[in-house]
Length: 465
Image (cartoon, rainbow, N blue to C red; front, side, top):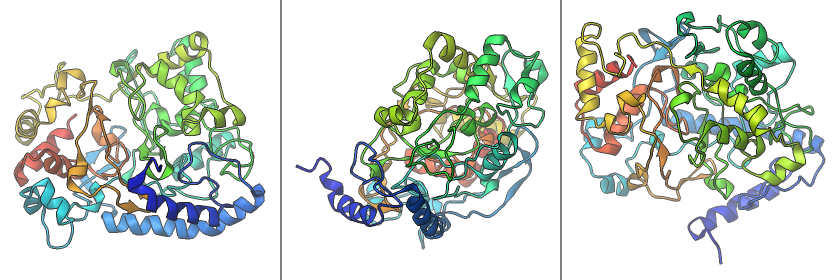
């Protein structure tokens, strides 16, 4: 019996397409394990490069249909390093003939039955869903090539979002152990060649060793030395901080390791490591209960799509729990949030420093908006829990977009809102481009019916965090 009857027709179609182009995409969508390719690497590369323009054009068409991707910087509002403006405005496109206020008046069932949920609120597919794997933004690719002569460029797919909708690069670094120093990055990117000079005299020997390991490349599914890699030359692999640039994020993405078949695996946006010292649940499905568990799991299996069999074949790194994992965790646990000078020690706005609109936004956050029920201010704007928003109330499960079959998101971790302006795009899969998009999303999903003025107040408040 088919274990996935809802998606059987989709899987049969996708399987046919995948196997017709098996040189480019050897993974059948219904598989648990990733099989070895059946053709030489040179043929895979040639076919993938030939298909790449169409792959990217298809994804760009989807993005343009869902979002306004133009560059609209918010006047006078910069990310914490002061080198990149925060983007303003709602970017998710409404269905024709609707408005945000009208949409908020409808029930979830009415929105679903009339197909009025904006496509930008639906799960966002990987640029190449049937292949998946890590995809890095161009600024990270260029920097690692220049500093380390290591190539993070895939021959089959490129990053899909414009630079102005991604985090500041390189991001600033703040340490819990040395808050008086402010940003210790000096505007530079931590790499295996620069980290010692950047951090000597600031961190301890244990933290320095942990940082070295976080910057050491190890094999990963698409970046390794075997025949089914997605880089031109055999590769040492990737480092933890290739995604978590300067222990923050650069918006690199891949697919969750926790689901099968391939067509339902959701896109994962890289979360920041800031404030890790207070976070107690980790991983895309939050089954890992310490940063040590997460670090070890990533090294052993998640870099390989959660497939320990593939990891063993490609060169899995098995870090020693006491002498390596613990040191990596020590470094991750001293990464602080940027200063928020308008907040008091318990996360409330100081009335003597905040503007009236920001104070009004705090009241919306605490009350009508229901934000503080999960994003608790004195708990660093999180609650160490997972919540199921049940977005599937608003759309028909099983819809397909660029080979991603939309199934319910299920429970998702409450991410911290501290320094949230530094971390676009938003939600676990990066489906929301701006903070204004997130306000509209939660206004609809939670059914709180904020006015236009309350939305602006809430946005002003979020920018103070």
